[in-house]
Picture 1 (cartoon, rainbow, N blue to C red):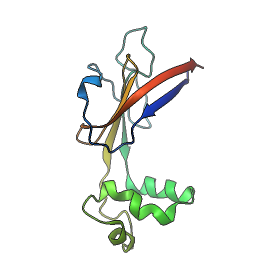
Picture 2: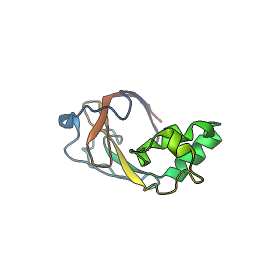
Picture 3: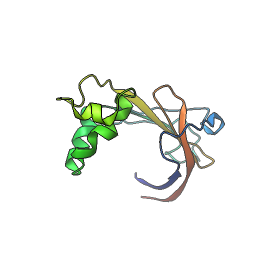
Amino acid sequence: MFVLVTVLAAGCGSDKSTAAEEPSSQSTAAATGSTTPDTTTDAPTLVGRWERVNECPQLLKALEQAGLGAIAPSVVGDYFPEARPKELARKDNLCEGAEPFVHYHFFNEAGAFGSLDENEEQVDEGSYELLGRF
C-alpha cells in the first residue's frame, strides 16, 4: 500500500527544537528495511519514526547522477563539519574519512513532521497531510 503525502517543513539543519511534537511511541525502519509502526489501528501507517543511514559515497553518487558532482564539496559538509568546501574540493577522494550517520524523520497522528539528527536532536519541523491511499 502506498500513501501519498504532502510535507511542509523547514529545511533540515535549522536549530529549532520542538521535542513535544515528536511521537511518544516510535517505530524505526532502516532505509531498506520494512516496518510495522507502533500505532493504533485508526492511525495511518505513516505515523511513527523512520531512520536512514546516510553514507557519503551514496550522496556523492546521487549528486553525480543528477549532474551536480561539481557542487559535491559544498554538499558533503555534514560529514566534515570542520572543513570548508574549498578544502574538501582538494581531496583526491571526497568521501575519505566520512563516517555514516543516522538521520530520522517522524510523523505523528496530529499531522506534525520533523527530522532528527544523528544525536536525535530535532533539526526541522513542519506538518503533513495525507492526500489519499493507494
